[in-house]
Length: 336
Image (tube, rainbow, N blue to C red):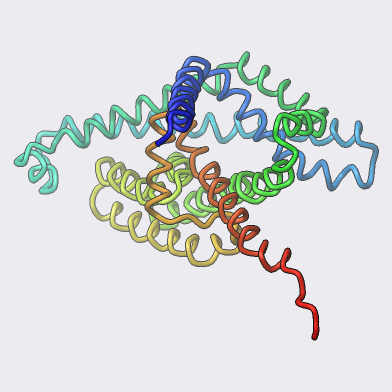
């Protein structure tokens, strides 16, 4: 390896390390602006449809006010109900842990020193409810994020073109194509999958006798945002919570219902929603998840897969162009 290449690689590693340090230092700010950007990108879908019928300023006002009303209604109705069900579930778990006559499963776990599992589930649920309550009561963050989303919605095209201006001319079109296909396509599809699984779980669980259906549905839907393992984690966690609070019979019903809904999502809804927006090798998928978690925590977990998809699509497009280059540049042989 020449000295020039060695210095180049060392500078790349140093730049990556500095980027990670800066990302960790400004993680809260970056997370807020990233969430605002995702919200603006989602609101741009109805905006693009509406501005073909009415002037753009009026369309922006209608879309933004409609989004605020939906968010406020969701917070007032669904959010508060989820918090109430979460507090009731915590009380049930504490009551179950305080009983002297343990079920056979509890005695089995206690015999092998695994009785801490239920306590960890309870502690994790209490922590999650605290985070959820903080989000609902953080008015400043919500207002600030809404204002950022509004300005991104108004000047989104100008901001996007300004960002593309930092890229080399030869790569702007390819970056724009891969970003829309991979990143935005994945975000849209994943949100639709989360919405489907949350709503279907909230409808099916009461039919099979499971209490706290709305809270458990939200847990399953949020965990489903983690590609690859999110659905499995959601099924395991929900089944454990139902077993600890409502008994083995209800837990078995919840497990069967969750498995059926998961199969319906994977085999019917997922191909229609995602299409070819994300095609990653499972090994690359898990590698991206671990790197994202290590780099940016929870935000990195959510964004690692679409970023990895962008890199994969970019590499494929470059290889396709290189493969087609000889045929394109080949000159026809002169006839004798």
